[in-house]
Image (cartoon, rainbow, N blue to C red; front, side, top):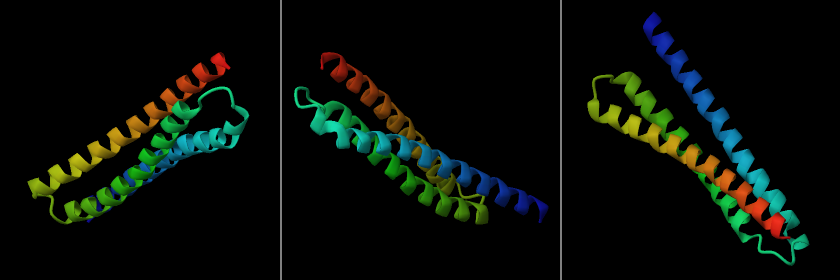
Length: 124
């Protein structure tokens, strides 16, 4: 019984950390993208499409992270009931890897957006 409680507590901590990370990544890209979109009319002499595209893509990836969090929650629940199912373990690990990659790509999209914006502003 104690082991089940510890596993549930650990699962809840992992899900909570995942949600917090997803919020951070999504807000970072979406906020940057939205702020740039609001300011693009001021940049009539330069092309703001690169930073806009990067941050929009980062926001989209941040949204995809929520799908992976939802899916890992379902898989984790099934895994808690059947810890011997190797196929389920592989699905769970693969889903976690996809979510991590999505988060990393989202952060990279933010970085590329910053670089693209800096390049745009230096030519402005």
